[in-house]
Figure 1 (cartoon, rainbow, N blue to C red):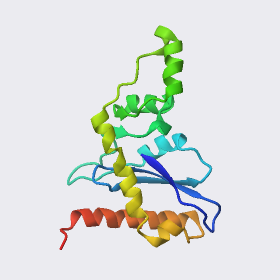
Figure 2: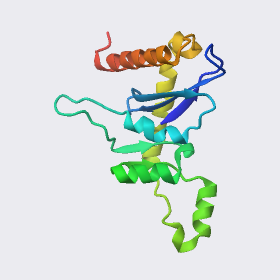
Figure 3: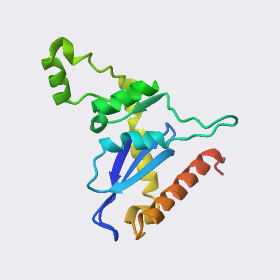
Length: 168
């Protein structure tokens, strides 16, 4: 999961796209916020928007694992992942590790970290770069957040269709 600031726009100074992507760099869920909004509070809203349809049955709403950078390493986010049975691959910030160690046995266990899975975190970066290939997304010409988010969904759908259809 990652947030991308997209610079100056007609609607304001910046906008941020918070998104989740799968291992094939396809977007799973978007949340659009003003540029000054923090990344960590958007973690849960993005994960709750994930719905991936399979060939049969209900859509999948719970990923097996979530790889994110240190911006998302809050206790609240880790508690949410544990509560839903999702494996969290988020490195611990140095100040959080120091506070945990300072508390001794009451500080809890150290955060487990799978470095192999964490290396796949760049799929979100590559997904954002694919979205920026569309000029309307990169330049943010839309005046309303609703039309900009509609453009994001259209681009996301096209990315999914490209990965499904055979390349000629």
